[in-house]
Length: 92
Image (tube, rainbow, N blue to C red; front, side, top):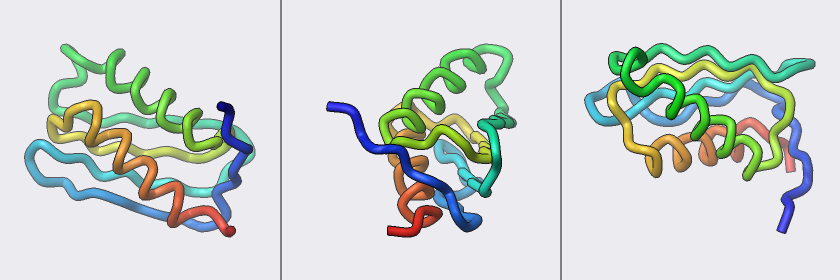
């Protein structure tokens, strides 16, 4: 089941910059731009980006400025934080 496309219309954030969590900041944009800052980027950067892209796709987001400040969050936390930020940033 494919979700409908959702547009980020206002800045939104979810999560925290605490250990084992991440802060997701979404802003409106004409393209998809993902910026990831992580303490474990050298080891897991590709995996983090893959999970971020998957979560955005699952939530129907194709255009947004995405800023991730990761502090060692697990995949399910990344997906949950992105879903929360998307819900806050979309007008429905």
